Length: 490
Ligand code: NAD
Image 1: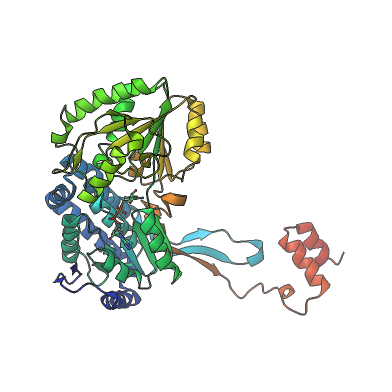
Image 2: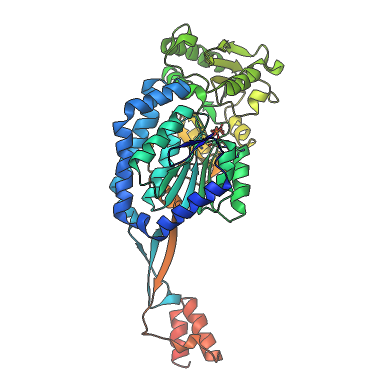
């Protein structure tokens, strides 16, 4: 069953014909120029802001229902993030939409030049379930700020949030330009059969390949916000307590590890691992008590499929005897306690798949600098983290480790800086967003050169004489004396 923008739940699937009809309507709105005006963009951003401010309670309830997300986490990592993204965009938009004057060159003299950002047209946003409110609406902020018409397809795996988004967008937004299609694979596939001007997808790399293949048919540009195994390198010269607290917040405090930028695995030295594990255990007990399955501050696993997947990672015989903390689970509540494993073998599933849950393997090395080559021998992650006080190690990390983003001495919070692009590289994605990068992602940078009729040099026109050749050669290589020599007939 699908629900579309007219608000009716339909027994028949949202098929390719319905999708085509929807895109046609949006193309009409876009062609009429409605979404291009600055006023329209501002009004839509203000409506998005109203949604976030006026419906805080409903949003928190939906996130509770989908993920049992703690109120503080729901507020900080979804509501507040979205509010500040909207406010930042509203504040900066006038500057972003203005054409940017650029220098001109000798080859085009006399002329002036500028870069004019223009909307792409009709764009599709497909989002994931783990931060279902933020990941759906943050790209929509960029799309409308840049003046596009947009279809949003929230994740069916967070159904309460998906339904709430559909309801609120219908109520607050201009539905001739902003539409929501709820549904799963059939509905997404129907959407993917259409021609879009950009597809912005958040989710796993396997589906990312399906999106890219569908987009290729129409040469549609894509942003793929994917995931991967985000490593955390921990040095021994750190503030142990702060490191443990930040690691816990960046693993179990991020939706029970169901976050693309959550710590996937830790690398530290053999000597330091026991100290780190002891400190993690101490702080975990302070955070979640001695029965974490009962803790209100720990999100549950989103559904049975993902719960079973995580249990399989833990029950893999290759990691038997490697659990040094936790391991308990409650299938009825879909909860797994914070679990730490030490030196799971390289060929175990947990060391080869994105964990996306509350399990933290710790890998030990003899020399911490070996950790950089371990990271670089794997697919490029969305984020990589380093805890250290060593300046040289920080420099080496920044220089040598390739990842979507790097963060030193914390986990995950780099995405809260709107001046930094957020996105992956290689297997963790392509393209980026946040702040001005969102606006740019949904804009085409149109190159415009202005010329007058004066100064029409005949040297560029046939017949091509050797005098013209020598003059243009000197001119284009910036050789002023050569130009003078040719002009003087020397
Ligand atoms: P998901 O199951 O919600 O899927 C994402 C979207 O893809 C959904 O809207 C879904 O309907 C659609 N989809 C699923 N299968 C499809 C198919 N066969 N054809 C077309 N569309 C399909 O989310 P997920 O993939 O489980 O999300 C988790 C993954 O996303 C992790 O890898 C995580 O790291 C990554 N992620 C990345 C970011 C980021 O910003 N880079 C953020 C969140 C999650």
